[in-house]
Image (cartoon, rainbow, N blue to C red; front, side):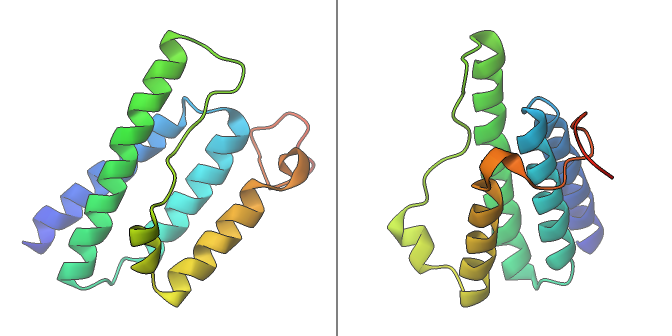
Length: 125
């Protein structure tokens, strides 16, 4: 059972990173970093938590893949990615998850995408 879940986790992780390749460089860097941290953070989750984690990330991958495909098929200057969180979902978040969401929001709304993006040609090492 654990081996099957591990295979599912690895396949999902790879799928998300592949979809991220089609995002603009700044969003890809932010998304890759966040996904990496979340998957590491949830390595030791219980069965119920792990199943919920996988369901949410699978829904994310499906939605983002659909949005990226639409963006590639009909390029727009600034394509919207992601989805709004419902009040119901927010109410089900733990305090730690709310904190992580707040940190992600701060990172994503920095002026001129100041976060560390090694793929950006203007990135300073």
